[in-house]
Image 1: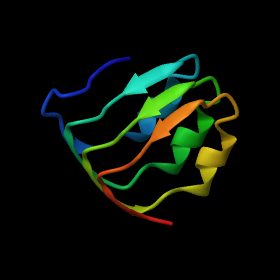
Image 2: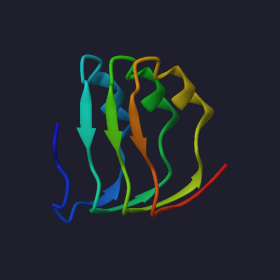
Image 3: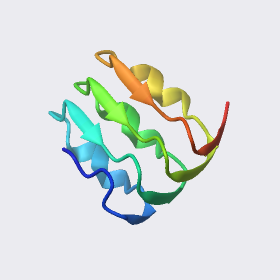
Image 4: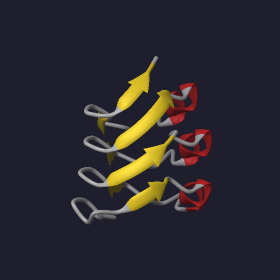
Length: 82
């Protein structure tokens, strides 16, 4: 799912976790805010997850450790901690 550079505004919805067969999610270069939902850890088939260059805050959830197939995870250029 490629939604990068679309000027998307708002928070990442918990409902993203329903996309259990998703392998790529490109949401970089938008204006996403808030925290990364812990439910993202349910996307165990995801390979590429790019969230860089947004306005995300808070801690990086430990549930990202559940992404057993992840090969590329980009969270840079946000205001994340942890």
